[in-house]
Length: 340
Image (tube, rainbow, N blue to C red; front, side, top):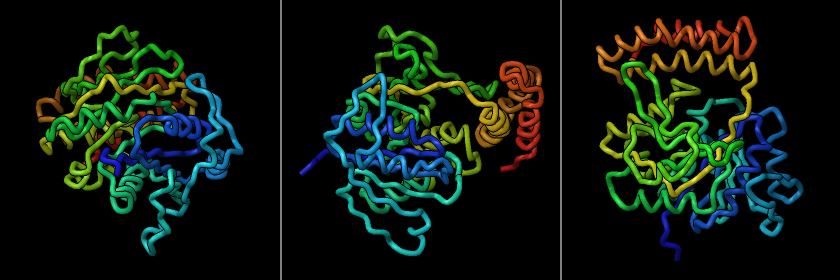
């Protein structure tokens, strides 16, 4: 009998099967003995489901600078079903299977896409922990072990996250947790772009960990309900969850022994417009929900004297798109109008 806590790894896919199968290949090499994997496809239109199934059946290889492809563990057993089947009947669930492919008929965004995977794991897989993992990541063989060990060490710890490196620059740190700067509404990534020389090798309590990879306890999910607030759709929902975890009385820890690598490829113009809208809108939602009146007032001054103009310049100059500022303005306008 396996005494290790059961971990459900939830990966959201949206038109990104190449990243997803590389991520899956790294997961199926890990040393942790008790886990399941759930891929939630958010209404992809790029043949993602077929490609993922081809990978599972050993018909499609993936290449990575971080590992060699393994054919010996193929085929990988999988179960696939449409998400709305769960509303009308119970699909055939074989918890001995390694991979579950949940198919959404539309894009529910990052927040509800992950919530769908969490609810499935909670109801059908007897999960003790839920690990949200971006599909554009590659994981270390021991990345779950250390996070579970830290989480199990103290009942007060409700959420943990790993050390995140850049995929393209494997020694460069992306994040070792985040600090919320309430006076400006900025979420500052600790250690960002620093070369790892062991300066962040201590477990520490942080304000937030990245939604790129976060391990949360079952009891936290049960206490919070939907883990990610669908109001955001995309961006800030992970920071919102961290604040709610803290307010529920739990600590958030960064775990340096757990390591992953996250891709930071060039953002397309289409994606930059999407990001411009949602980041501009959602920072207002986040601050209105949690900042004090004084903090929110200071944030407004900072935003309209600096942040707004920086966002406009980024989207028009850096991406060389003279109308890319429009989503930023629309997002700002909607954010100002949003009410709790």
